[in-house]
Length: 512
Image (tube, rainbow, N blue to C red; front, side):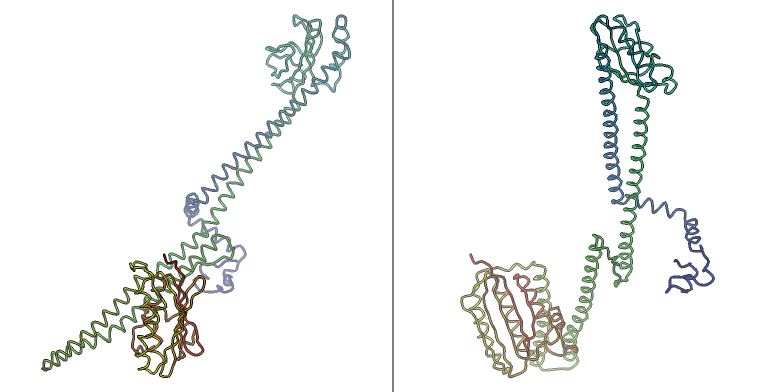
């Protein structure tokens, strides 16, 4: 069922895939398709040219040619073997009859009349009309038989195949075929005479000709179907590629939500469509993340820049003592340092994710480093009323960048201390397994109950405070993830029931 252009333009009947009432005439859709083709005569030619340019069609064409050549050679071999088999069977029959003639009458002196009589008897039999006989003396004078003469260039005693170029075949056979081929065997008798027995290959020639005709038709049909199959495959592939190309064109035009439809065939095009759709989804996510990062950067930069400008403007419009100017300059420097720290963190994250930072990897006593950092933050934890404890397995060493490890632990400890209320607990645990080293920093604060939020906070500038009124830039956990990526490790956030548990997993690297 199809839809007419008028109905489509009026949006009538589209949902049920039928024409509207005025168009619902039998054969109308087919007529419209034909009229469309008539109005666009170049469309078929353009599509055919596109088909000829496709790699699949060229490959199918080469395959069809190669297949046709192989089939042609095989059929030619069958034809040749059939012909040789027929000739071999004729030779066997001729040899048997030649032996029988010699055995019945003998070939010694005085046996000539008997052999002549036997040959004349064989010639007289109507069912032997295609069989040829000839008995000649030493001077090739005909003694008996139905051949009109000895074949040219034929030696007695040698098997031969000749055409009737000298008109030596009986006229009865000549009427059936103007160019008769004869298969003959001959033998020289003891008295010098030569006996020839031959077979006019009238029926055999007809059989082989008919066989060759059928094989030629078979080859032609096979070649035609091979080419048609190649064209069909090319059109099928072209249709699938057109779908992908059309979707890509729509996406390039700004329709970023478009995806390649999956026909559910489970073939390589379905796999390609799935991978391309996954890539498009990922690009869409990255673009959404980029928009979010841009908005967040603008928000986070606006506040310090606004404070900086207002402070400088007020200082210029009102006379102040030198000490107050000095204080304003110091506050301005603090805001500038905050902005520089923000950009330095962004650069560090980008370099870590791209793998372009050149950190020096040395043997690091991870246990000792972690103990020192926990001791360093004990005073800050006590000031906030937080109990900070550690369970660190001693003697854990790793080939790593001490600066990166310090940055990771510092960011996580500060993140925990800044987001839990007084009276909470923070526990730092370091253990070593056979192939990994595990660092856990867990607290019993409010945590992040939503699993989606626990994944989202690892992105840049993501803060669960929608108003972005709490301190920080939302880059701490993003920097931790980038640094872990550079160290070859992973970071995971889990619900601590209550609170948040940050699980860092490092692969063990051999220390030389």
